[in-house]
Image (cartoon, rainbow, N blue to C red; front, side):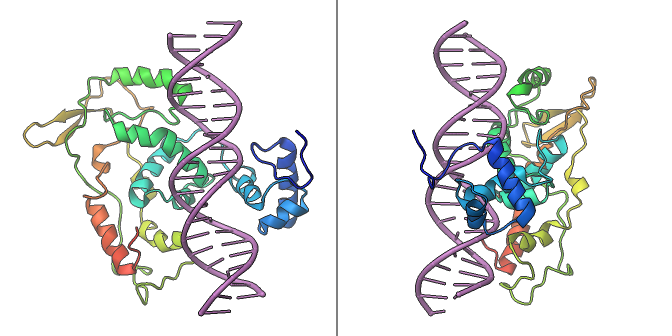
Length: 258
DNA sequence: AACTGGGACAACCGCTCAGAT
DNA sequence: AATCTGAGCGGTTGTCCCAGT
């Protein structure tokens, strides 16, 4: 099928297209993506150029497996922010919202939805790692399934009335220039190191009377390669202290849709 | 070796918002 | 004030690849 001169190209980007776009943006800078597409001679819509640049070509974009630390961070930020992928991405240098969204949808959402054990797979537990995943899972298959309501606890979210950005002059007036800055004051105070959980191998013991799930260090085998997702940070977003507090602050700030 | 199903990820699409005119 | 345009965001789809049969 022949392609007319002004037909828009769709689908995967070729190496030549990538080079053309990279050269043009390097020379002229970002922005005015409609003109980028025209002036660079790309048979692409401006939107496609922008997305290709921001998600793939832009210098500093990190490719490859999501690390354990990054995964932990994504999980915790998702608890805080929900599907605000762009906001989450801003806390993970080099990662794009699209990449995080994909990673969440293909890995984490299922993992956390089923959450059959307290054990969590290694980073980027994709098909490539399935055998390792299965092997480690087998080691842990004597762990009690977490059916009981989980303790809800926020470990590292601090904010207060004296925060320099927590008292805007009016509820709808924020200093920031976008959503990110609106919310950053909520999460800037998080010591990100505290979001990362150390990894003693743990065994769940469910107390039938209290429905509490306790974690016991059962470190006969060393599995320091893997991090443990402690149930205590798997809070129910509708029921947790954190959520209540976030809603309270969001309400005060007129950010009801948080 | 061929087929198939599922995972991973790039890209598209629709919508919203902000700034310019 | 209304309209237009560019940019950004999140949901969804399409395609490729790989492991299992």
